[in-house]
Amino acid sequence: MKHTTLPLVAKALGEKYDIQVQISGDQAYTNGRIINLPSLPDSKEAALLARGYIDHESAHIRFTDFSVKSSTSMLKCLTNILEDIRIEKMMGAKYPGCRSNLKDLAEHLKQQGSFTPSLQDPPQTLLAWLCARGRLTLNQDFSDILAMTSSTVNAFLGTGYKKLLDLTERIPNLVSTRDSQSMAEEILRLIRDEKQQQEQEQVLNSSTSLAGKKYTTMIRVAGDPWSGYSTFRGEPRLAEELGRQDIGIRYLDEEKFYDQNERM
Image (cartoon, rainbow, N blue to C red):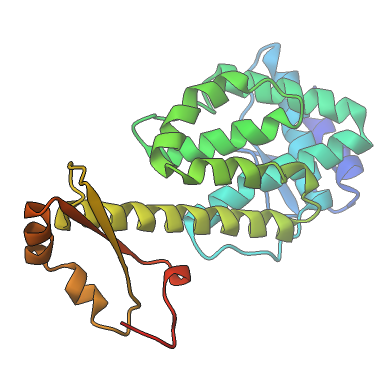
């Protein structure tokens, strides 16, 4: 595919007649007016890459709302992954040839290692997992990336992993850029909630009689942040004394366990 034909293809697919196509650097992207393509190799792969990149970036121009902004880099990454999947699905539905081009591009980039994360970096692994899970909904073969990342994400999120699975079942239902961002925000809240819960459990295990020992009798204590509960739960002597009598104590933070009108 000659470079001089790229603007014509981009204009037709993007349904805008003022689109410019430029070739520079090593990234493909668009701001809604200009499509930048990376420098393409002088090989048989050039046509595959050009078609895939043009179809992907033209899909952004056609279907992405560029007024939707992200407040953090992590939110932007999550939104972009979900939005990529959404717009490729819509582009493929309208143009079956584009579906094939996008699938070929994704497979090529996967083989080049573009979707393979460092498993020692849980947030990066989570992004790769989300990308793989979403691309499977496009009938792109990312089962190997999903298998590679699942155990790391499971360990990272703990009980939140099942919630993430349930949440991402809705990926095929995304219909707008705002939807993509809203799901990204839900994922971030899930991560924050699960990490907070894990931190609370670590504190609980290190400061109460639950650390590594099973007791014949367990006492559950619930309180709210307006009582003296936070200070009370950090007092180890009570747990030690109860432990001598084979009694354990567990502190609960969930609101369902206490009555606001009868605070401790």
